[in-house]
Length: 246
Image 1: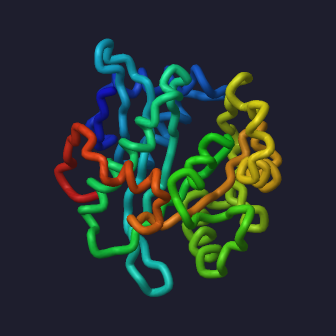
Image 2: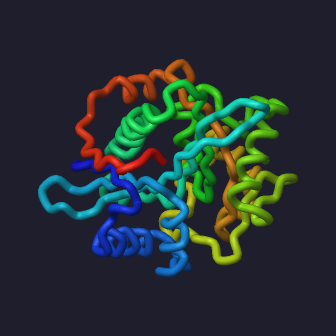
C-alpha cells in the first residue's frame, strides 16, 4: 500500500473528488459541500493507495494545532473523515501509517503534550482505542478523571460548538454521516465485547450518525504492545511538507 501525508492545501481537485467518492460509497447523506467544508477545517490528510493500481483505499483527515489547557500549551490532533475500504480491512495499514504520520507531525511541537480527540459513530473506530492505547476516555472499566473530562469538554466545545452535548459526550450534527447497511451492524461475536457494549450504551444514537467524543494522550508508554510495534515500525510514508508550520 502506498501512503502519503499531504497538507490539505496541496490536495488536487482530483484527489478531493476520489476521496469524496470513497466516502460516499460507505456513508449515506454525504454532500460535496459538506465534505469540502469539513476538509477546509483540517490541515493534513493521510492517503492510502493500492500500490499497483493507485486506487484510493482509504484516507484520514487531521487538524493539528496548539491550544492552552490549565495554563499549559498543548498540541491536539483532531480526527476528521476517516474511511478504509472493506477490501483492505484485513490489513492493519491504516493504524500503522496513522501512528507513523503522527510521529512525523509531532516533530513540529516536540516539547508539548499531544492529545488525540476523535469522534466515533461506528464501533470499529472506537475499537482502535483499546487495541492500541492503554489509557483513553470514556471507557467501560474506568471513570473519566475530572481533568480529562474538562479537557474533552473544552476541545469539543471549541471545535463543535453547540452540536456537542456535554451531558452525554455526544456530537449531533444537523446532517450526520451515517454508515451504510452492511457496515453499521455489529457482527455476531463482537456484541459481547465489553468495549463494544460500552460504545453502544454511551452512544445509543450511533445508527443515526451520533458521534461519541473520545480522548487519549499520544506518547509511547501509553501504547499497548500492538501500538508500540506500530510506533517502532519504519514504514514508508511520502511526506509532502507544508511551507509553514501548522
